[in-house]
Length: 291
Image 1: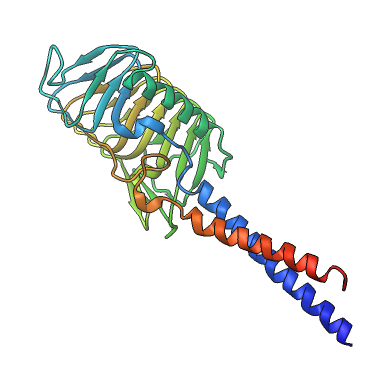
Image 2: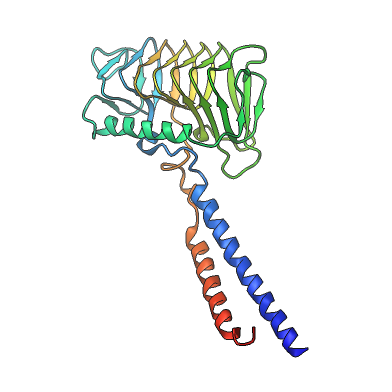
């Protein structure tokens, strides 16, 4: 009876320590993946980035840096010839070298684009209009064009109360939103953690209110008085702003550049994991003779 009880205590202790090891490992995995759906690299510093040209008509306001590479044409923006009524509350980086600020940003954009494209899909929404939908965090796929154009032209992104809700849209060709359409956030969703990977070009309607980071392979255009809480990042083509648009880089971002509060506490988790492993090995050696 005593031997049986001893074996039971030993096995129970091993199960407890094994559980601690598993819990610590799962915690490490969660911390390693949280907030990194689509790391933007140096693109977190830009509100607008283009490959060929940036054109603004009217009193556009860009809150954040503006970059362009390999092109150098910036039109309608104060601070760079020929100037214009549009303003950039940040720094303008036009041209340069492949290893310069805007060149590096374009390289990081290509990486982020491919990262977003390669994520496992949560749901295929091909052929469905985004208007009137409420979506939870996930990866949503369109094999061709994504629309927010008819009926109820509001798309609600619900963070579901999660600590780090991520929304990724994988769009095979184009993204089109209608005039006065809106992308809205609730329940913990953040603009910096919404990503639109667009296989060709994106077109935002006049007066629309858009949220998230557009990563377009070709070009991006916004109609008059459109507002964007996010980033317009065009890998190869132009960014065209029709006039009186407002583009504001979001405060919170996923991946590198995110708020300090999002940094995982891996130190304590590693300590827990190490302690549990050491204790498990010690118990195994001590009682191996009784097993």
